[in-house]
Image (cartoon, rainbow, N blue to C red; front, side, top):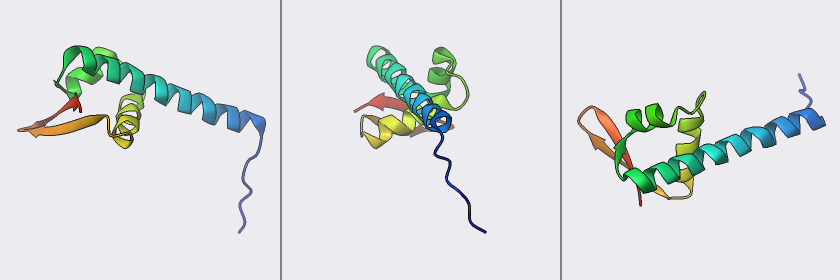
Length: 82
């Protein structure tokens, strides 16, 4: 079975909107960490109140750019800028 790739303008606009939301979340996270220093992931997510999975996607974006580091602490993970 062949699947057709959607080439509609609507789907490409939605993808760009999603990417922009991820970039915005990454910017919020970066600024938050610059101000607060090392924080737990749960505190960061609570303080920023990013909708959906945008906190995780923003962290992934920053990780890919090698901007943050993760530290395992007992039962939680803390995050800080590199």
